[in-house]
Amino acid sequence: MTAPDAFLTRPAPPARSFRRGAGRVPYLLLLPCLLVIGALLLWPLGQVVVMSLYDLDSVRQVRGQRPWPFAGLANYREVLTDPFFHTVLRNTVLFAVANVVLTMVLGTLVGLLLHRLGRRMAAFVGGCVLLAWATPALTGTITWKWIFDDTNGLVTWLFNALPDGLSSALFGRSDWTGYGWFNAPLSFFSILTLVVVWHSFPFIAVSVLAGLKSLPSELLEAARVDGAGPWRSFWSITFPLLRPVFGILVVLSTIWDFKVFTQQYVLAGGTQDRPTFMLSIYSYATAFSPPPKYGLGATIAVVLTVILLIVTGVYVRSLLKQEEL
Amino acid sequence: MRRSALNLLGLLVAAFAVFPVVWMVATSFKSTPEIFSGGPVPFPRHPTLDHYRTILTGDLIPGVTFVDFFRNSVLVAVATVVLSGLIALLAATAVSRFRFRFRTSILIMLLVVQMIPLEALVIPLFLMIQRLGLYDTLASLVLTYVGFSLPFAVWMLRGFVAAVPVELEEAAAIDGASRAQIFRRILLPLVAPGLAATSIFSFIVAWNELIFALTFLNDQTRYTLPVAMTFFFGRDDTAWGPVMAASTLLTIPVLIFFLVVQRRMVSGLAAGAIKG
Image (cartoon, rainbow over all chains, first blue to last red; front, top):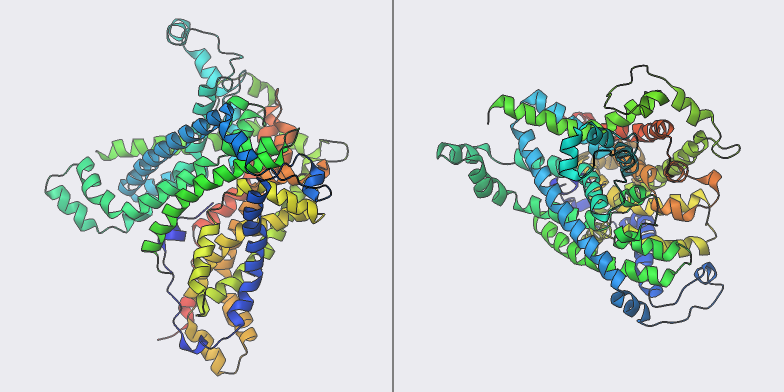
């Protein structure tokens, strides 16, 4: 979770001369932090690449009790030529694109709406939206799963409540009890999208709202006086001025939606539903579902990381342009 | 657009956002027949605590109840918060109070590591935890979560430390206070609200995390809440009443903490400390 403030506020740079001759002190203060980040983030990041070059099929190899047969790029060859990997990659990309677009559109619209609502109404709606943001992915997803339960779920009940004739004409069935909402991949991905968008649009809305509040209101008023409608003034004034904010939000959403795990794991009830696999769950299942294939799983993790690294490069560049370090 | 239309839209958005949360809490208080009668009854007609009683007192495995998982989660989260807060405070002081070589590089590094997909680190961290002999311990999770929450904690705290007026520290230094005393007597109390906000973020990271806990724990008595939820309640033919009660108990601390952070805890402490 990241607060919007993290990139919208600018702490003043340190500016005191009497601290300049501090010598070793700052390095000592930083030491524990650098050790932890080095050991728990950077070292594993290197290690995942190393592991992807070996054939690792047992926990004993992982523990270092048995030798690691070097495989070179064989794991990469195996993954990249596997037709199933292409299905997984297609699932991941399509899902990420759909979710980023939907989250951005809904989040921006809600942000604009919050900006125009009266004070009390905005506080109420904003509070409700925050609640969705704060709900843990796990319990939010479990609740959506209950809503789509095939016997007593609310959605099943609603579809059963449709007049039989209408339901048959539209969907070809009138009795929805026992209908598996999560069985067909398209239906599964639609619900997963609903869950992920529900969980991530609040962050976009709150960030867009913060951006809108920082804009000079004179510009929008002048545009209105000149006869610009809401559509025109958004694309001619609001969007260009908030372009950096939108850029960062798109990149962050892309990163988050590319590696969705918890929601998928819970909706699918584990790692058995292969047709709906995406990269992060595919990597996990390859490594840990019996028979374990740690090397192959690491290879998929590297592919995921490389894709995200490219997106991150764009993010850091845009951030460095606007933040004073 | 007219005001009433805007308000209506606002209410629709609010309903979409809170509906699952309301539905979760409402289901947890409904009697089993009411849950299974289906239908959109938004609130329980005869509220009951049965499901809470079931999960809090019933054994999920012999001798282990939901309360044990709750305690495991609290232990992990609290240890994470303390360690991560302490290390982050030291680091934040360094980057916002000192100028030194590599300062900018370290700040950029802190940003970049936040973008590392943690999902891709499960396999190498599993290796590390195995080799350290920490497999199947709660300590393995604490270690992992400190690593995950630290970059953001430092990034966030650095703003709070920078906001404490340096004049206060200079005054203390002139009065003969040592660096350690300045840190403990001046900086720490003034930065406490920021530390609280940061701690809450670390807490939420540790409290919600599923994948690593799923991978590093084997013995069911050590499960944290999220793992226990997916393990005991993730099956088909789910008893939705107890599941929603457990979900509510897992969610409530997060919601409370989240709303607290959201207000940013604006403290007048620093503002009132300098006169003129």
